[in-house]
Image (tube, rainbow, N blue to C red; front, side, top):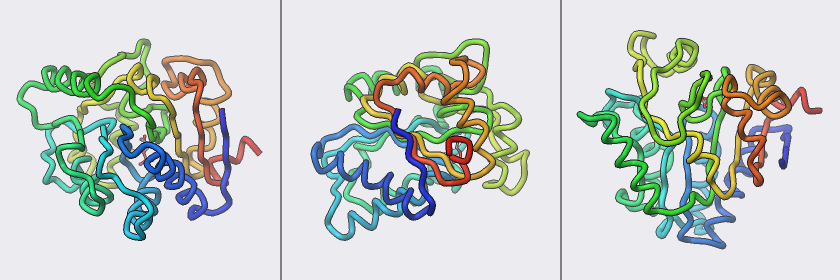
Length: 242
Ligand code: PGA
């Protein structure tokens, strides 16, 4: 496990963008697993800057996002499709057909999960999976549970997750109750995983995930089993590792 703690958010964002940009330079056709939420925004900003300077190209890359809310169309400002278009896809040379996010509006969510897994299988191994961590230890929307699911599936969001994400919505009731998420086996199959953690409020959970027992009660703890995990933390999140 490669742990890096940064004193400034800018350094963390540059490091994250540097890892992704470096991969695209050595392997332009890389398959990227991407994440949403507050944490990766600065990394996407740096990638867009690097792209505009001609340093990073996405033309041959393929992307798969971790998750999407059930019931939000891609035109909804809080959908993850909208987020990715805003923060990355519309600003770089990535053709829409090379970007993949589960369709939260599918009339048959189970079928949508099967379709997504088939696309992932066809793309081969994810070269680099970017991840955040929830306050309850979730990765993607794989919530703590007595058992975890390997492939893409429909998940009922835990109340703490809806509360955490309510900051992006007008009110708590507007936060969807369900989501589609990549499963933990897909995540763990990635060649490289980059976990990004920011903020004092994540200090305890990231410490527990990376140093505590490996348990489905804290899905991020499974990352301890990955042979090529890099963790980028700001000083607040990394406090317990100093
Ligand atoms: P956040 O979400 O980046 O908005 O804190 C992370 C997550 O829930 O995985």
